[in-house]
Amino acid sequence: MANDIVPRGNGIFEIPDSVPAELVREKFPPASPAERAKAIAMLFTAMKASDKGDADAAMTAEIYDIALEGWPAWAVDSAVTAFIRGEVDGASKVFVPATAELAETVKRHFWSRIRTVHSKEPTLVPVRPDWHFQERLKRGEVALPKISRQASGAELGAKAQGIIAKAAKGGEDG
Image: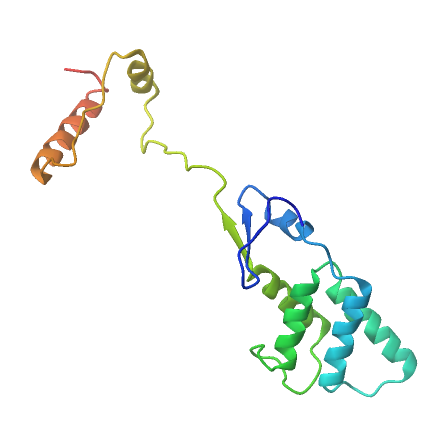
Protein backbone atom coordinates (compact mmCIF):
# COMPACT_ATOMS: atom_id res chain seq x y z
CA MET A 1 0.00 0.00 0.00
CA ALA A 2 1.32 3.48 -0.83
CA ASN A 3 2.74 5.79 1.86
CA ASP A 4 0.05 8.43 1.36
CA ILE A 5 -2.75 6.04 2.38
CA VAL A 6 -3.42 5.98 6.11
CA PRO A 7 -5.58 3.17 7.59
CA ARG A 8 -7.85 4.61 10.30
CA GLY A 9 -9.49 1.42 11.64
CA ASN A 10 -12.84 -0.17 10.84
CA GLY A 11 -11.69 -0.52 7.23
CA ILE A 12 -11.55 3.26 6.69
CA PHE A 13 -8.64 4.73 4.74
CA GLU A 14 -7.56 8.37 4.55
CA ILE A 15 -5.87 9.67 1.43
CA PRO A 16 -4.71 13.24 0.72
CA ASP A 17 -7.00 15.31 -1.47
CA SER A 18 -3.98 16.01 -3.68
CA VAL A 19 -4.32 12.48 -5.11
CA PRO A 20 -6.68 12.65 -8.12
CA ALA A 21 -9.79 10.47 -7.72
CA GLU A 22 -8.95 8.42 -10.81
CA LEU A 23 -5.61 7.42 -9.22
CA VAL A 24 -6.98 6.49 -5.78
CA ARG A 25 -8.05 3.02 -6.91
CA GLU A 26 -4.56 2.35 -8.26
CA LYS A 27 -3.15 2.90 -4.75
CA PHE A 28 -4.69 -0.39 -3.58
CA PRO A 29 -3.51 -3.79 -4.84
CA PRO A 30 -6.25 -5.49 -6.88
CA ALA A 31 -7.77 -8.78 -5.80
CA SER A 32 -5.90 -11.76 -7.19
CA PRO A 33 -7.62 -14.14 -9.64
CA ALA A 34 -7.89 -16.69 -6.80
CA GLU A 35 -9.55 -14.11 -4.51
CA ARG A 36 -11.99 -13.11 -7.25
CA ALA A 37 -12.75 -16.79 -8.04
CA LYS A 38 -13.51 -17.44 -4.37
CA ALA A 39 -15.87 -14.45 -4.20
CA ILE A 40 -17.69 -15.60 -7.36
CA ALA A 41 -17.97 -19.17 -6.02
CA MET A 42 -19.42 -17.87 -2.73
CA LEU A 43 -21.95 -15.74 -4.58
CA PHE A 44 -23.08 -18.58 -6.85
CA THR A 45 -23.20 -21.05 -3.95
CA ALA A 46 -25.30 -18.76 -1.76
CA MET A 47 -27.71 -17.50 -4.41
CA LYS A 48 -29.68 -19.03 -7.28
CA ALA A 49 -28.50 -18.74 -10.85
CA SER A 50 -30.10 -19.87 -14.08
CA ASP A 51 -29.35 -23.47 -15.06
CA LYS A 52 -26.64 -23.45 -17.68
CA GLY A 53 -24.40 -26.12 -19.07
CA ASP A 54 -20.73 -26.48 -18.12
CA ALA A 55 -19.56 -24.40 -21.09
CA ASP A 56 -21.92 -21.55 -20.17
CA ALA A 57 -20.94 -21.82 -16.49
CA ALA A 58 -17.27 -21.29 -17.38
CA MET A 59 -18.16 -18.29 -19.54
CA THR A 60 -20.40 -16.90 -16.78
CA ALA A 61 -17.57 -17.17 -14.23
CA GLU A 62 -15.24 -15.38 -16.65
CA ILE A 63 -17.76 -12.58 -17.17
CA TYR A 64 -18.22 -12.12 -13.40
CA ASP A 65 -14.43 -12.09 -13.02
CA ILE A 66 -14.28 -9.16 -15.46
CA ALA A 67 -16.79 -7.27 -13.28
CA LEU A 68 -14.52 -7.70 -10.23
CA GLU A 69 -11.20 -7.11 -11.96
CA GLY A 70 -9.05 -4.25 -10.66
CA TRP A 71 -10.83 -3.77 -7.33
CA PRO A 72 -9.12 -4.58 -4.01
CA ALA A 73 -10.04 -7.87 -2.32
CA TRP A 74 -11.60 -6.08 0.68
CA ALA A 75 -14.03 -4.18 -1.58
CA VAL A 76 -14.95 -7.34 -3.51
CA ASP A 77 -15.50 -9.32 -0.30
CA SER A 78 -17.54 -6.52 1.24
CA ALA A 79 -19.86 -6.28 -1.78
CA VAL A 80 -20.31 -10.06 -2.11
CA THR A 81 -21.05 -10.32 1.60
CA ALA A 82 -23.66 -7.56 1.28
CA PHE A 83 -25.42 -9.49 -1.53
CA ILE A 84 -25.31 -12.75 0.42
CA ARG A 85 -26.77 -11.06 3.50
CA GLY A 86 -29.46 -9.31 1.45
CA GLU A 87 -28.16 -5.85 2.38
CA VAL A 88 -28.05 -4.34 -1.13
CA ASP A 89 -31.09 -2.12 -1.62
CA GLY A 90 -33.18 -3.04 -4.62
CA ALA A 91 -31.27 -6.26 -5.32
CA SER A 92 -32.83 -9.70 -5.38
CA LYS A 93 -32.31 -11.60 -2.16
CA VAL A 94 -32.65 -14.89 -4.03
CA PHE A 95 -30.93 -14.61 -7.42
CA VAL A 96 -27.33 -13.81 -8.31
CA PRO A 97 -26.93 -10.12 -9.24
CA ALA A 98 -26.17 -9.00 -12.77
CA THR A 99 -22.51 -8.27 -13.46
CA ALA A 100 -23.10 -4.52 -13.74
CA GLU A 101 -24.99 -4.52 -10.43
CA LEU A 102 -22.14 -6.42 -8.77
CA ALA A 103 -19.51 -4.08 -10.23
CA GLU A 104 -21.45 -1.00 -9.10
CA THR A 105 -21.83 -2.41 -5.58
CA VAL A 106 -18.09 -3.15 -5.37
CA LYS A 107 -17.42 0.43 -6.48
CA ARG A 108 -19.80 1.82 -3.82
CA HIS A 109 -18.21 -0.32 -1.10
CA PHE A 110 -14.74 0.84 -2.16
CA TRP A 111 -15.58 4.55 -2.10
CA SER A 112 -17.57 4.27 1.14
CA ARG A 113 -14.31 3.51 2.95
CA ILE A 114 -12.16 6.24 1.41
CA ARG A 115 -11.90 9.58 3.19
CA THR A 116 -9.96 12.44 1.69
CA VAL A 117 -8.04 14.74 3.96
CA HIS A 118 -6.84 18.22 3.15
CA SER A 119 -3.18 18.04 2.30
CA LYS A 120 -2.43 21.73 2.77
CA GLU A 121 -3.79 24.81 4.47
CA PRO A 122 -6.62 26.51 2.62
CA THR A 123 -5.68 29.68 0.78
CA LEU A 124 -7.65 32.77 1.74
CA VAL A 125 -8.63 34.81 -1.28
CA PRO A 126 -10.06 38.32 -0.89
CA VAL A 127 -13.66 38.63 -1.96
CA ARG A 128 -12.75 41.52 -4.26
CA PRO A 129 -9.02 41.40 -4.96
CA ASP A 130 -7.54 44.83 -5.51
CA TRP A 131 -4.03 44.48 -6.90
CA HIS A 132 -3.08 48.13 -6.33
CA PHE A 133 -4.22 48.05 -2.72
CA GLN A 134 -2.31 44.80 -2.15
CA GLU A 135 0.86 46.29 -3.64
CA ARG A 136 0.51 49.41 -1.47
CA LEU A 137 -0.03 47.14 1.54
CA LYS A 138 3.20 45.24 0.72
CA ARG A 139 5.15 48.50 0.42
CA GLY A 140 3.78 49.65 3.79
CA GLU A 141 1.96 52.65 2.34
CA VAL A 142 -1.33 51.54 3.89
CA ALA A 143 -2.15 49.32 6.87
CA LEU A 144 -5.03 47.06 7.66
CA PRO A 145 -7.12 48.26 10.60
CA LYS A 146 -6.41 46.42 13.83
CA ILE A 147 -9.57 45.02 15.34
CA SER A 148 -9.41 43.39 18.74
CA ARG A 149 -11.68 40.59 19.87
CA GLN A 150 -13.05 42.90 22.57
CA ALA A 151 -14.45 45.39 20.07
CA SER A 152 -18.21 45.82 20.26
CA GLY A 153 -20.53 45.13 17.38
CA ALA A 154 -21.05 48.85 16.86
CA GLU A 155 -17.29 49.50 16.70
CA LEU A 156 -16.83 46.67 14.20
CA GLY A 157 -19.72 48.01 12.12
CA ALA A 158 -18.19 51.51 12.09
CA LYS A 159 -14.78 50.13 11.04
CA ALA A 160 -16.43 48.05 8.30
CA GLN A 161 -18.28 51.16 7.02
CA GLY A 162 -14.96 53.02 6.92
CA ILE A 163 -13.30 50.25 4.93
CA ILE A 164 -16.24 50.16 2.50
CA ALA A 165 -16.10 53.95 2.06
CA LYS A 166 -12.33 53.78 1.32
CA ALA A 167 -12.88 51.00 -1.17
CA ALA A 168 -15.58 53.05 -2.90
CA LYS A 169 -13.08 55.91 -3.30
CA GLY A 170 -10.59 53.56 -4.95
CA GLY A 171 -8.68 52.34 -1.88
CA GLU A 172 -7.03 55.69 -1.14
CA ASP A 173 -6.22 56.70 2.41
CA GLY A 174 -7.72 59.68 3.59
